[in-house]
Length: 322
Image 1 (cartoon, rainbow, N blue to C red):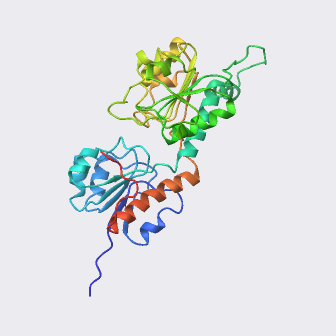
Image 2: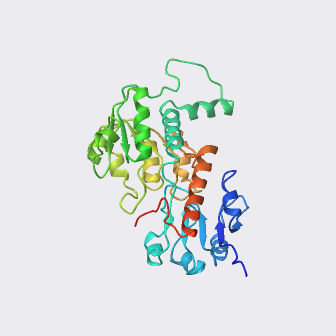
Image 3: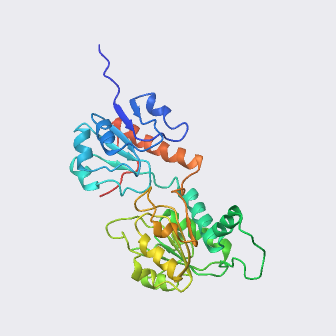
């Protein structure tokens, strides 16, 4: 009796240590071992004939991708909470479930948010660059003055798991917290924060943290007009690519309307707008929100769990709904 060959699976980037073993034990896995993303032609060639693909945010999954894969494709498991790289309608038309990795990166991303918030408010990046450049300096009463956080109003745009974790940590800084979602949360989930309409939230947030997902409705939600609603000298922390108009953010920093800003995810990664790079008051990091070994192992592990569940004939564990 002939044993059927193991299902072919594509993994588009090397996951964190220990993630691959459960796939390679059971499936015929093709792994992109290069320390870079596959270009479009390489991706379309590599996906052909696969029954499962473990993707990253830099892999565009659309009708062309699905056509290249073929009708046997059973799941696209995205190694991310976000899924703006995936055409959900095209996947649904073909009956291909899409999964993401919610929940497991909440703590790491909230910690990074606060690291960026502190760095921007207290001008830590400027101070480090000053020292590393060898520029002569001396302490003075007005030297690199920053924003003190205690008692400063904090606004959270997007009160999901990460937004709630950010709000919870604000208690340690005695910061009153407001938030905006499409609807108010039950009090037990709101972490003591007060729901506000978007424009009211902006007008009352000296520090604004953006954690809502980028969708058709939220892309460039914070454009020049809405950034101008923030109090003079506000600080903006952007943890989600595409929600903040990056050119408008740079212009607000250049004009002095904003005190500082920090950005972790960029709309056209790995490209960063030159206007932002020119701003001394901008703290810019290369998508480090979930960058801990524990969290990346958990993200990769959840993506693998979804593949195992579907290829075993079950339901995906964390499906993305259209």
